[in-house]
Image (cartoon, rainbow, N blue to C red):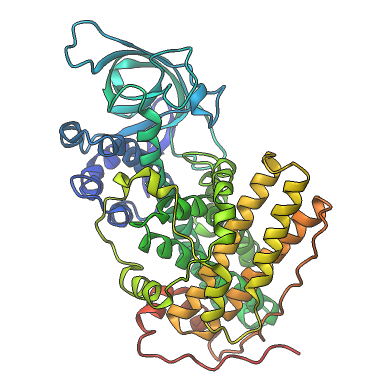
Length: 527
């Protein structure tokens, strides 16, 4: 997409084009809230260009503070302006409770909404061109608890001394550090900044994941087309068994992350908003990085050319796991769900879940996810994981009970060693929960599409869980038995490898056709 030559910043995105498009994107945010609708509108306007989409997402997320705080008058008045996230400071990183920006109430304001904001912000996208900044600041500089921060809408006129920070990725974005010294408007109530921020941040995790999934959906078909058209030894490389195997494995993983994203969105109006959002931000985005990097290697030298989206997406994708909060912090948040996830006894309703997936997956629906009760989103209703997978009736010898039992033994072992709260184990166990949920997603991908070609997606994800579990056991010298991996089903030999792989990538069509198609016969396990 076109960039412009700025006299101070060089080759950057056209912020006027962004400003012109924001009203249409925000029409899906206020007065109604349609998470997927806003993302699809941004795609229509900006074609999934990473720099434009990131700038659009940052502006949309910052604007969401008005919706999350139910500041309806301001939300209507400022819709269409460019916003930015004035949260992070160089010394704090993702520890927002340690910000040093201060807010002092201005005299003569009967509503108590006007404050003077003073501080410094760092690594902020859109900041030079933004009309308003969503700023985290402290009314009491000495406070440090959850009620210590408030959130403010700060106009561009209250900012100064911008300095661009060059990056390795998304080079046409404008990230800066700058100072704030001027008036701002309190959003919500004093001390409620973290609560508003949490309401904003949960849906935002879907924005980041959407970009990762979109990059994979953009790059993998490009590699398939390239390897189906070029010729080596007078043969298309996709016909070589080693190339087809690599593409096949990548397609299985890409289909899974695509389905996992839209599966999460289908359930996002439920208390799983937080759990699935964090999983997408951590597990899914790291998988996108992995898939795009491997895809670049399979595609070969063409991927390194500047016009190719194969290499460009692989490089730019690495910004998304850290955009709006580091993936490590998000994974640590999952740890608190572990016991309830592993020990749930409720019986999951397979038919009800399949109905939701058939009706809501890949459909833009209005909802009020941003206003969900935080107490509910912190306590999603888990069900008996292994029993649910067993009732799904997989035609392969997969025992999810072994995974759950081993995970429980890991928790018991680290508890006995009194290392339960060490960040290393909290992170590892959080990733383990994400990978277990990804396996459940793979099973539901197979179930809802009725396509046995996705059985290898299940096997591959089972082996990912086994690899992570065994690494936790090995690195911690834990007294727990290792998990043996499963063998993949035989590699298919389609007459048209290109079309076969593209069809597997099109999960949406697979779901839409599942109601009339029976399960195809499953391949026999390898001997």
